[in-house]
Length: 160
Image 1 (tube, one colour):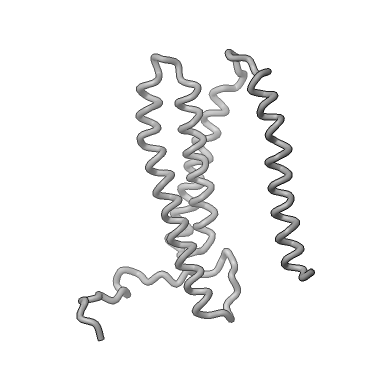
Image 2 (image 1 turned 120 degrees about the vertical axis):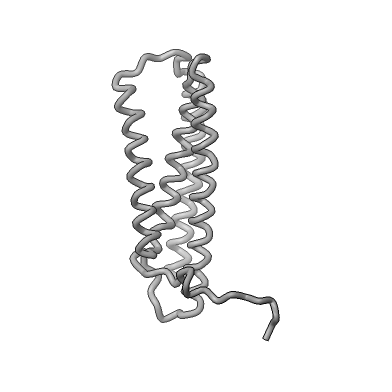
């Protein structure tokens, strides 16, 4: 067996085993967790998630500005933080706070989708540039070959 195939098989096996092993735990928690729970440091948890979102938004902006491939990871992490924040905003809201939670959801969900779209587009661009030049290493610090607006060709549709 080739080393790359062995490594891939180990990773896939580990991911599937992890998902299967966590399933009974989630079922157990669904029956055992209390419906009502008073949490210590509730404010610290919420502010911490928001600070993480700000951090990853800024890291994503930096990576986009510097045209770095690490933008994929930063945008994905930020999108997941936004989705988790939206989930907890809505699922933990009191009835009186539901309007504010839904407004938060209306901002966070589209923002997360935009970040995932950016990640997808950058990933496609990176793959295309890598396929075009196989001598280049695919490293997170690699500059993306995304043309700036002033460098883009205008397609007049005339064909050539």
